[in-house]
Image (cartoon, rainbow, N blue to C red; front, side, top):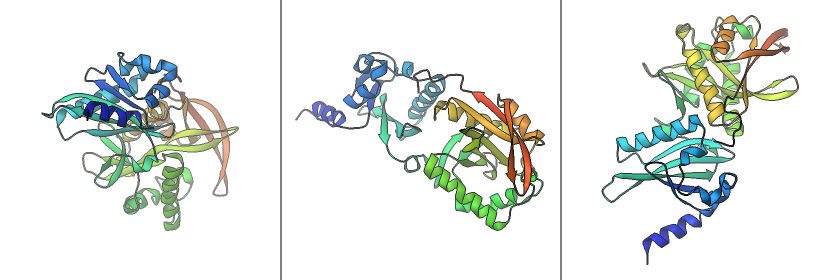
Length: 301
């Protein structure tokens, strides 16, 4: 049996799109599912062209960083990139008999995002910045969340510190968001000390006339005024643009919450509207901040 033919047959019969490239990112093979997936960009005619041309700048950076990761260690062979259009996208290293990296393949698999995220220390990692790591929140984070959500000064925009029941409900709400939307408020972990210092992430929110993706953030008081909220918020905005492919991202902030408004502005947002929320027996005027995806739709991922 010719192994090359056998392997090609296996790849061709895979319902998931598979794109194989050389180390210089030149596409050398696309299975039928991939040709269909990329039909609007030329399908099989993309063979011989650079895979990078099919992606936006942020995704290109992710691909290059992943190749660099493959090169660091022969044990680094598979990495989850992102979830889009109902599919998880992976990169897998291709090595020769001596373990030398000679290329990679990109594969789109249809499955729930929660089952595919990179696991580190038993946690589902989402993204990282220079000083922070963002991961899905777990039940083990309850004590750290209590320090944040039960601090009246931190929760001044909510007009009260949360009860134990409200903290538990808040945590369960994130679990529902992870399951239903594929995202939510994530735990923000300091790389310096490994502590959970806040929450930041993306949630679906209602504003007059529409439902939008919001960047939200909430930090332990001990870590205020150090740029952490801005750093995390910018990363979540870029995740929304480059991974989720949304056209615009919002932050909905009380009109008296100057600190959070300043974070939104540093995140490139401008006020685009206002409305009043009714919460905790009060009318609370809110400003709507918004920033558009600079990449537009662009037909790229």
